[in-house]
Image (cartoon, helix red, strand yellow):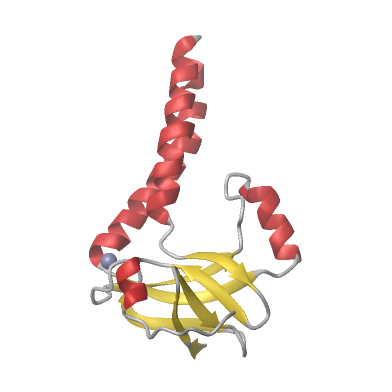
Length: 158
Ligand SMILES: [Zn+2]
């Protein structure tokens, strides 16, 4: 476990990956930069095509495009993240649960609402830090603008 060496690089956070292990970000919310009210440990995978996560995940685990992080979230964004996960779970479970009780158009509507609306909303709320690019030296992460703007800037190319 090591303190993350990172800076603002355009729209992304640039993290020095050298040394490996888990990278700990400052104790502030990675979305809004407010003081953190809890911390999240997570392994980020480089998922370019998040809508086919299982295929992509298998592919990227294979090429080891992953970064272990620990970061802070404020109360509000921790709650938003939990709501996001609840939306994702509901989007997956609801159509299956309702299927036996419905027929015809109702099934189609329920599946559409769950998959086309609830799932993307859930993914959006639950994703507070995203790995957008990764090589052996650096990782580029997408975080909240306010957190990003609190970091030192660099003109260095990655
Ligand atoms: Zn926040």
